[in-house]
Length: 185
Image (cartoon, rainbow, N blue to C red; front, side, top):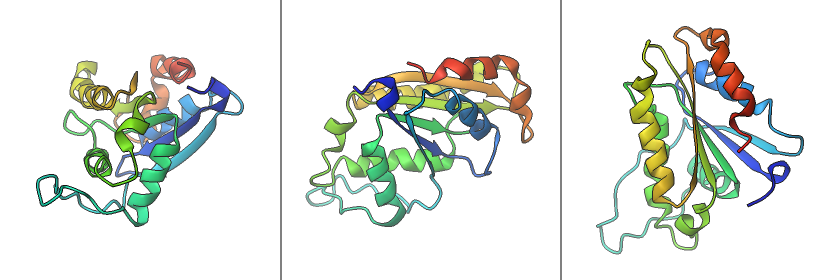
């Protein structure tokens, strides 16, 4: 895999609120990437609904279009994927879940070689939770870690911050400290 300065980080924003706590924490982590490490930030809003067609006919999916195509191309171009999602009902947000569902389709689009091309990349998560128990984020962590494992990706872990109202995560000093080295793997 590319050395740290040649890495291409794709930050996938899964909140339904722009500039939320998870995004603020991810931006703090991104500030500590080395010079030359590329960053691309894309929102996950605007993805079409996912329809499971694996067992319909030949199980082949058509080429994605629009924002789904943009996300597929950006996903395949990245060396490091950073899922940025607030903790919603103990798991990833609906836009993140929809993005992961689209992986099932992209694995079956002729010529993308999605599964083999994802192997060896690194998947991270950045989240904020509003409760008092960090273990509430265990299902979110499990979803992302198992998704990485399924595709042979490296698991970079989850950066977890505490914050309820917008901007609260900036008062979580331990999360801000962890953000400084989180993407350095």
